[in-house]
Length: 270
Image (cartoon, rainbow, N blue to C red):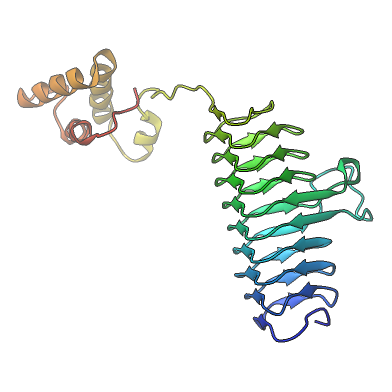
């Protein structure tokens, strides 16, 4: 650990290469692995099980959570491991669990860059040669392909992929699950238009759970009533059938459906 100067809080299980340069105020938690040519600025904290490969430089007061892989080789078939490419990360960033951030490629300029005050949530991926500004937020599972530019204060929603070479403008907001294949204007809100529908009864799953054909048939008949009426009308018809003890709709399963409809506060998917 010749690259470590002065007193530092390093867990005995951490592995730090001789060529790493770590500020004395850093905290390195259990089972972290820090490669040669990695630089950690003042006050950085690696909570546990963090892997950082170089060349990678982190500024001040960054926090990295368990199982993140920072500065590893880019996911590019044409990458030559002998190429000297880098990752640069600014100050006061929060990088949550299982985030992956790749170094750059020669053809993309050689460096992936993350600004300052970003919040990169769990399972997000920042591909090679991406350029993120300051105060950017990537919500859980956001996925950036290579060469993506995200300007200051932009928010990328959960589970949304961004195509290569796309630019996302400053102060824009992208809703969860939105696929981005073209540039996003600054100051805008963008979300995929999609309808969520229910496609009948989960008959196969119910059979596997031991439901009889008779029980499944009653559930299907109840859902036909729901399909042909609005929610309030369907609820009234189902309650009326229960009161009359109609044999085709009697039973605990239809009662469960009635209780669910009565307790729904946000409406139900049709």
